[in-house]
Image (cartoon, rainbow, N blue to C red; front, side):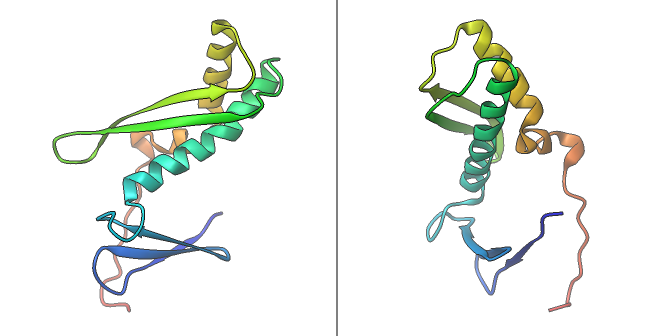
Amino acid sequence: MPEVTTTSDEGFSAENQIRDFNIDIDATGEDAPDTLEVLLATYGSCYVPALRVGAEQRDVGDLGKIEIDVDGSLNDDDKLKSVSFTVKTATEMTDEQAEKVVTRANQLCKVHDALKAELEADVSVESGSL
């Protein structure tokens, strides 16, 4: 099970310890990527292997280089309203092949799955524990 420790000494920035890696995230976007940018980058990064496996499983083969332009739109409350991907691959596919690969990638991508409403975080608070 993945574990992440998020620490903030003050302000809106946080340091995240993931195994032996540190990732800084700044909710204001001033000193590091903001939370939605990191979410979109994570989603795109998760979609790459999902596309590759989906292409292999749907007899398309190796996709070669993949580039995904990830776009998130916000609602009036500055919360994520929608996400769109523009996927570019070195390997050419028919529309039918691309549809099959995307359908399979949607089934495989863990972030895609986690964005469903029923998988929202179960939050518990331990106030005064630090």
